[in-house]
Image: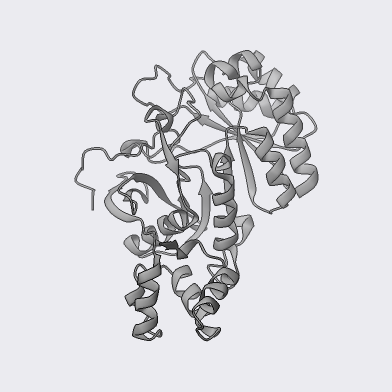
Length: 344
């Protein structure tokens, strides 16, 4: 069975040609899928025999909502989705002044094992298909009855560890014939896979790259993030400078502030020195509580932020969203928690 929702328009055209169907049917099929059709029966402008042919040879990889938890503090919802093979992932829908943004997942679980992230503690199962990434967007829009205008690939998984599928998803979601979501409205977060950052740079996409840094020294970063033992800070930052040069896009560095670990004046000084001349932005994130990790938010986050700015490094503190329903940074898992009174 073919994963037709992951097809590009030229691939749809090739499929249609293989069955000697009129060429215009390819765009009809592609448009239905880009619009979120969950079954071939919904494609009402296609004759019944074509819909039956599609059902015989293809499947639509949907993301079905199992639960939805709504934050009691902000307009934010966390979804638990069931995929076509029964695996589950979570995504978070957030409301801002500029509209709705979805934090979506790219893998079931994660291999990276960062100490402050719940996803890695649940282990790695498999990569998501491009269609399964699209379906999180379609399902969240339909469930909440809203239009999503921005995406962040910062949910479960390491996007650059699923590079081929993520690149195809990015091209599908930005296709003018499809969803036509501008690349500058998409952010992608990585823990620092240097070889894949270099590959992404060659694509010269105009998305925003966010790099999880979290420490200014190799010793400290390796303690927090095992990936640093493979790609150290020197290699990572060299790759980031190259990325900026090739794409013309400023990188955002994510820095999880952990009390007594990486929030000292020395850390601020070393971090500013590391990033000098990069015109990068540092996004400070007070660490969120997860099971199995004895980490607490930095008490001096505001002071740390002020110190960075005094040293000439642009930095801001990210607003904490969704921690009341385990939907904040680092809290997503591939299984849902107990339902509460806000669960739909």
